Length: 391
Ligand SMILES: *Cc1c(COP(=O)(O)O)cnc(C)c1O
Image (cartoon, rainbow, N blue to C red; front, side, top):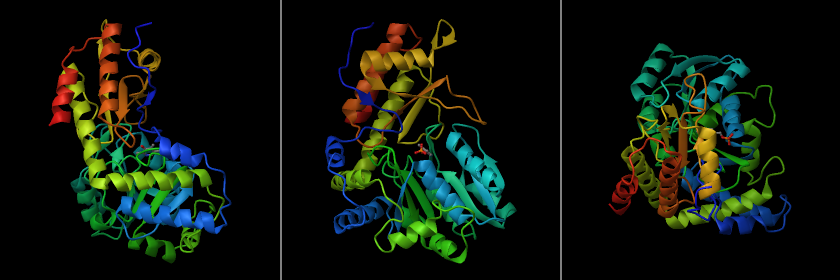
């Protein structure tokens, strides 16, 4: 085994992410019952602080489940049977939202963009023009599988002029990159607890703007129960939840949100952007090709270098990263648009991660490639990253 350069475990996957010690301690507190004043006080504070992260004056629902639960709930509740949806896919998660609508039997206009590229506002405008009867546009702000971000502000501008609602998967955008739900006119914005919200997995969040709230009022729920946002909204209006919530996660979320507010959203966005830029500079200096032409600031991905003419083996590399360096990285994903399962690795810049963690990751990655004999440029990555971090 190569000598051990790091003695800490660092989880740098784009979800789940590391949880700050203060949040872990809070979650170790005894369970309280959710139909109590004690819980209501905590829940009210969480809801208020979530609004400040989402940049909205409107409800942000906290739903038990993963990000997919929250997004499916938004899809199911905002898209009545018989309506038409425009759904963008340029990666694994956009493809998942198309799959969900297929399962619900919703007519779709599938806007597929090559993996690693961002959909443009012009493409959305064109789809809306060709489909004036579309009732919703659904897409990812940050497509985690391809580490790609699109210009949601410009897209929201286009969609707000139509009758369609804009449903945004902000699961690796909210809390990591600038997202202004009200100012930009996003109708429904979703995220999950295990990404930039610095919690373990288990909660999804759904922000609902005025047009989405009106749609919920004007339409009836389809054949689903727990996923009906009307039910969650009715409870929310009384500072309550319809079903037993993950009490410990909500306690932890209160502390994590307090930490976020103390740092300040603009400072968090700047930190993520800096770590992402440093990582991109380092990978490029190593001679690696980035997977995105429009990179997100919450996650960075690169194609593996070669080793004796073959692509470095993903399983071997990432196991060695864990065993030799305590570094947990993500691999690539496969889908209809591409198969990156064995050709790509990714690191996260979300939540409880700083320059030290990022530099540790970059040092570990270079050392591991070196020890394996992979074809990269040596000893230029860290200076390139430092130049960004010190700039
Ligand atoms: C992680 C992620 C999801 C899925 O969230 P789960 O919590 O795993 O259900 C969806 N979209 C994006 C962009 C993600 O990063």
